Image (cartoon, rainbow over all chains, first blue to last red):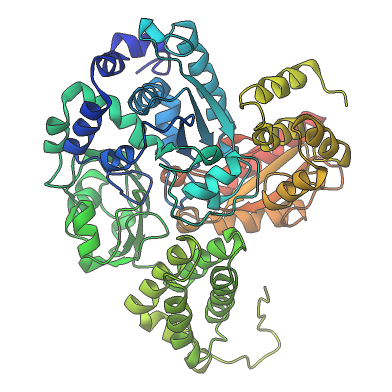
Length: 418
Length: 161
């Protein structure tokens, strides 16, 4: 759609209609609609949105805040940038409805620092909204005041974690906070805060326009609506696709995305961003909704679906994943800081062919000792996929053990030392 | 400390976004936009931001050390970031990275002798469905190949001449 980011285009297509409707609704009614919709957080955790908003103590006299998580740094994920680029007013409207629901005067859209061109687009859209009276004082005569601003990140995956994001928004290092208290009670500036992913906020206007039940009916029971899947890797048609909850993964790979490129066979899929455990080819045929992903012992996550063909070196993928977590670990807690570093070293050894048999069990032990013991989910996000790779592709790891690798017999063979 | 009128306007605009008594929130955005003009985070900038945001210079230093996009070393006029994370790895990002280091003779977070180009091997840039991805400054380049990379470097180097 040409000029899709402009407010004129948005207004011509039911733009801000849901917000005007929300003014006539009570906060309880809005939250009920959201609960009915079964909308779950689209950032990765999948927490029910209506429930999250209901935790805000509306009677509390502290100023409240709306914060949008546009940090989008989970490997495999590239959907929020499309929403901001092509439909920024939808996000603004979602924030407006949130502001109306919880009774708040200010909001911040935290956008990762690398997405500067999107910050510029968003700033422009915000200026348009102000100019048309959808932001600022006494919006459209409703008595609601709401200011919304962009806020740039500066390169840190951990700042996509909600409490670390709030620390960053407050001008500090992105180190997570202990929960409870949760952001709904004590968030930005220790005040009640609604904090959701871009896609989640952007869905709220649709939920109000069509009604919660209608939105829910697009998906499966308890998994309402549609979501954006970012398909990447060895498919013929990678891209970002909006699909109903419960869409078949088999259909996604072979029909929508045209199958594996070069006529190769499927080997594995990382279904929901790097933090989700890998699925083997024979596990990739199920309806993609939160409950089914969990049944398959993985997660819907951020929707970053990375498809790998038969020639993929799984050990290399596992190593790169671990290098990522070790690099992005904020360093605050020992099990994550030391655990990710140690796992990275072991996987480096395995990739280079100098791994020992004991290393495979050591990987399990380390990862299992990180699970649930780190200060924030980054530790889990590092441990679970590693266990997944080793469990499902053990033969590939074993083939790389020192005892199984051809030894150096001539000085002409070079060993890369990292 | 003096900035260009454009940068000064941005800094003041940023400062105004946060409530009274919460100006610390402005630290990171101010550093990012000022760094665009200065090319790096200098001691002078740290002191300036601390003063404007009502915090101590140490509190600004803490932040500079944490965030990967804030640099105390001057990067090149074109800071070229090559993603080698999973989706880009699957689509040849590693080969692109090897090619860049070979062609320019520099490594991760290093600058060419003429100060024109610097390199960084980065984590997921958020372009997975259009991998492999290379970012020049804030400019995204998708579906990169070695040929397109060479064209990018050629055009950067030719512009100087």
